[in-house]
Image (cartoon, rainbow, N blue to C red; front, side, top):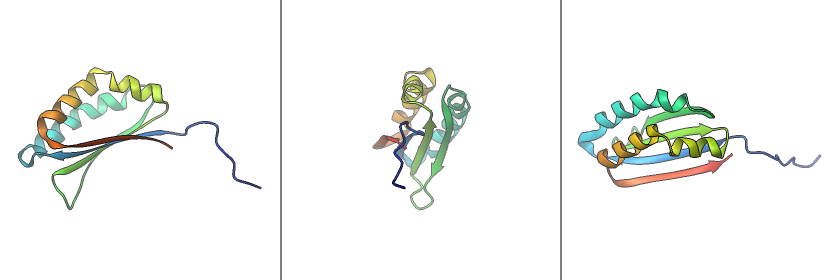
Length: 103
């Protein structure tokens, strides 16, 4: 039997790597913690997680999984994302790298 090609996307994975200003790491963590439950409650959100790099304390990673592209797009247009995006702009240094992957 050959390889079976899937006709649909199983999950959309969105990642955002953020370099945080050293003095703002705790504040970003607190802000993200408050917003995670709102994001997780959105239609199509399978998970939303916040990780800190143990070797580079000023680097954090937001990872979210979505059922459909439209679910991710709805999140990106939400008030929750607007607040999160604003916090990231204020609390991070110039390095923010965001990517979405179809898995």
